[in-house]
Image (cartoon, rainbow, N blue to C red; front, top):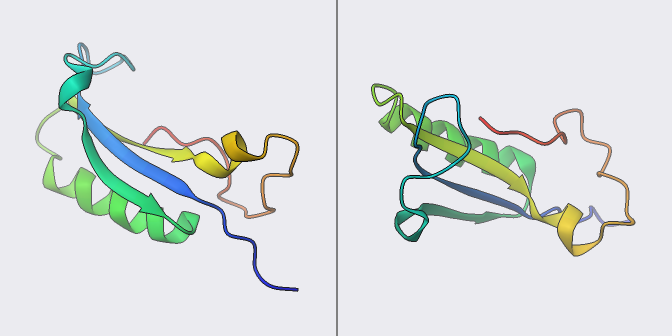
Length: 86
Protein backbone atom coordinates (compact mmCIF):
# COMPACT_ATOMS: atom_id res chain seq x y z
CA UNK A 1 0.00 0.00 0.00
CA UNK A 2 1.46 3.42 -0.92
CA UNK A 3 2.34 5.88 1.82
CA UNK A 4 -0.48 8.35 2.51
CA UNK A 5 0.18 11.96 1.66
CA UNK A 6 -0.21 13.98 4.86
CA UNK A 7 -0.08 17.67 3.95
CA UNK A 8 1.28 20.16 6.49
CA UNK A 9 1.34 23.97 6.35
CA UNK A 10 4.19 25.94 7.94
CA UNK A 11 3.57 29.62 8.63
CA UNK A 12 4.24 32.30 11.21
CA UNK A 13 4.51 35.93 12.04
CA UNK A 14 4.64 38.52 14.77
CA UNK A 15 2.42 37.81 17.78
CA UNK A 16 0.72 40.41 19.95
CA UNK A 17 2.36 38.74 22.99
CA UNK A 18 4.88 35.87 23.17
CA UNK A 19 2.33 33.71 25.04
CA UNK A 20 -0.44 34.38 22.50
CA UNK A 21 -1.61 32.84 19.24
CA UNK A 22 -2.93 36.20 17.99
CA UNK A 23 -0.97 37.89 15.22
CA UNK A 24 -0.24 41.62 15.13
CA UNK A 25 -1.18 41.79 11.44
CA UNK A 26 -2.59 38.61 9.84
CA UNK A 27 -2.15 40.17 6.39
CA UNK A 28 1.62 40.00 6.93
CA UNK A 29 1.90 36.31 7.82
CA UNK A 30 4.96 34.54 6.47
CA UNK A 31 3.86 31.36 4.70
CA UNK A 32 6.82 29.00 4.42
CA UNK A 33 4.90 26.44 2.39
CA UNK A 34 2.89 23.24 2.26
CA UNK A 35 4.80 20.00 2.72
CA UNK A 36 3.91 16.36 1.95
CA UNK A 37 4.98 14.99 5.33
CA UNK A 38 5.47 16.03 8.93
CA UNK A 39 9.21 15.43 8.61
CA UNK A 40 9.51 17.87 5.70
CA UNK A 41 7.33 20.43 7.49
CA UNK A 42 9.39 20.09 10.67
CA UNK A 43 12.62 20.78 8.77
CA UNK A 44 11.09 23.93 7.28
CA UNK A 45 9.75 24.96 10.69
CA UNK A 46 13.20 24.50 12.27
CA UNK A 47 14.75 26.69 9.59
CA UNK A 48 12.21 29.46 10.11
CA UNK A 49 12.43 29.38 13.89
CA UNK A 50 16.22 29.32 13.76
CA UNK A 51 16.23 32.46 11.64
CA UNK A 52 13.99 34.29 14.15
CA UNK A 53 15.26 32.81 17.42
CA UNK A 54 16.15 36.22 18.89
CA UNK A 55 12.65 37.63 18.32
CA UNK A 56 10.33 36.42 21.09
CA UNK A 57 7.29 37.89 19.32
CA UNK A 58 7.80 35.94 16.09
CA UNK A 59 6.52 32.40 16.12
CA UNK A 60 6.02 29.68 13.51
CA UNK A 61 3.43 26.90 13.46
CA UNK A 62 2.87 23.56 11.78
CA UNK A 63 -0.75 22.95 10.79
CA UNK A 64 -1.87 19.44 9.91
CA UNK A 65 -3.85 20.22 6.74
CA UNK A 66 -4.64 16.55 6.16
CA UNK A 67 -6.83 16.63 9.28
CA UNK A 68 -8.90 19.45 7.81
CA UNK A 69 -9.10 17.83 4.38
CA UNK A 70 -10.26 14.48 5.78
CA UNK A 71 -11.44 14.90 9.40
CA UNK A 72 -12.77 11.32 9.54
CA UNK A 73 -9.37 9.78 8.81
CA UNK A 74 -6.91 8.83 11.50
CA UNK A 75 -3.96 11.12 12.14
CA UNK A 76 -1.63 8.94 10.11
CA UNK A 77 -0.05 7.03 12.96
CA UNK A 78 3.14 9.07 13.03
CA UNK A 79 4.54 9.56 16.51
CA UNK A 80 4.90 13.31 15.82
CA UNK A 81 1.50 13.61 14.19
CA UNK A 82 0.09 15.77 16.96
CA UNK A 83 -1.08 19.36 16.72
CA UNK A 84 2.10 21.39 16.96
CA UNK A 85 2.31 25.06 17.65
CA UNK A 86 6.06 25.40 17.75
